[in-house]
Image 1 (cartoon, rainbow, N blue to C red):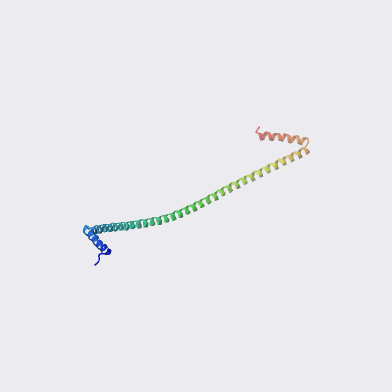
Image 2: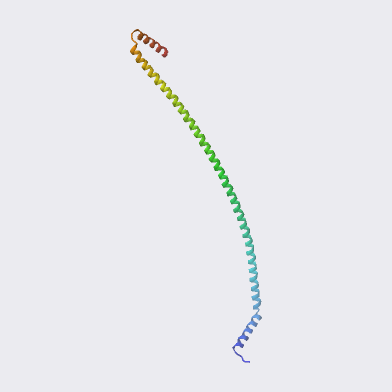
Length: 162
């Protein structure tokens, strides 16, 4: 058998592995791997716990969102009802206001008509008196005029309370 390079590489490898076994490197590696496996298992457990907790929080937020949406729908419905009630109230108030203003306008119109009638009657009476005065002046003379004058003065005294 020849001692070539391959033999020395194989012999060196076997000695190296034997030295590692003698020094207990395999136990150290196994312990390190076992420790790493325990850490990974603990991290997986923690991740599972966190995932469960996150799912619970997510479902809680979904439930709160649904409740908030339902409450928003209720608030919108209530606001619409209040707006309709306010609109009806405002419409009723406007109708009452218009009715009052119409009544006031009608009352003012009636007063204006009455005043106009009174003014027309007064103007007609004044015109009649002037016409009568002109006619009486033109046609009444002498004794009749003196009687009218005395009677007019007497009526004035009676009217003035003298």
